[in-house]
Image (tube, rainbow over the protein chains, first blue to last red):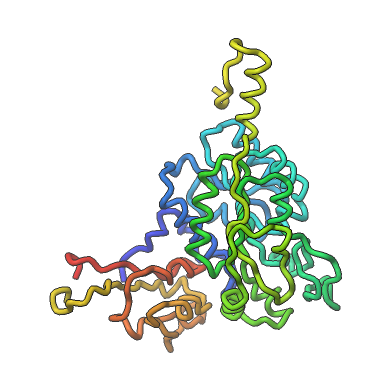
Length: 283
Length: 83
């Protein structure tokens, strides 16, 4: 019983137990990320995690890496600055659907357009968990939330399609039930040179599951298990989520594109020729 | 123990931090060899943590550790020198 959990070396154990509700999938998503960085040959001091506000924003505080908890919706601008000042870092943005797509939606599409070399892990629980279960841009039609007491009437975002058409080089979706696949996707995304996006579908038993009569965290996990279909290389136009419909999981996009910093160096070298010294971070 | 059994099935052990557990039941539901069950005892927060009812079946796959959102459980392979 005295043996220590091998994950503790990546966690700030003095902050445990975490604040997440019983049955929340966020800790499972963190386990997947820990598994990804364990197998990654990058030294830990060259990985940094940035997160925004919300339940998922707590991840930066729980991981024993160089991490930053930014203001609401702004993890991607902060991560962009971090990456540009020190291009050797692997910068991972770990945040929620509300933070990345409602408050920080513009930052997301422009970082994807520039092909900034970031890894975005979006934990999608279909609601604003920390503030009381309001409707988000990813809440499916007909789902109940505290601000849609007669069911949601707004069309939700199809996040993989948004990332794909904004220019991301790697797009995948997994649920927290698919722990091994999600860990593999995070590992692949961190090795990818360019903007990579992973959507992790997670249960929110306290606010989403309870209001929509899905049940506790375990019931939601069972629902993910029963309703998910693994279909790699699916066209992202066809992977939108319905209320209680099928969840299409898999790696949808994996392509090569010149990243922002490579493009900068190529274009400046074209312009200034031998006088240009390629930018490799602030000296 | 390692000499007595000749089967090639890997052997494992599961370690539970009772005080960190919030009783979500993920480890119990998704254990591939049905090792775990809710125990009757309470931890200090009032949750029922799991306990190993069938510890010999554990293969040390650490799937419980991957699923646990509270970092309260992990499985490990038992190597010959430990056994």
